[in-house]
Image: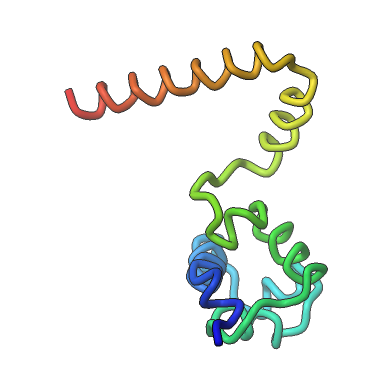
Length: 117
């Protein structure tokens, strides 16, 4: 039988990496997220996933999306930038959204050329 952490293997490692990169102890993150230490132990030791409320508290405290923490995406957006982008995105037409996506692809391609050359 698969466990929640086998379905989302990145969650424990990402949580720990983010916590350490922000120079937070487990106690610091627990206080910041307003969760019990057992929540972080559950996550970081790959013993399971917390309930949705606690997962969101940890995500907010680490300033990342649940998708990123769960390993569903490798895109880690700045906490202030993501809501601004999403609000703006929903106001664009489909054609405008396609244009923005194309512009992003061009920027990525140009950045890769610069990095190589």
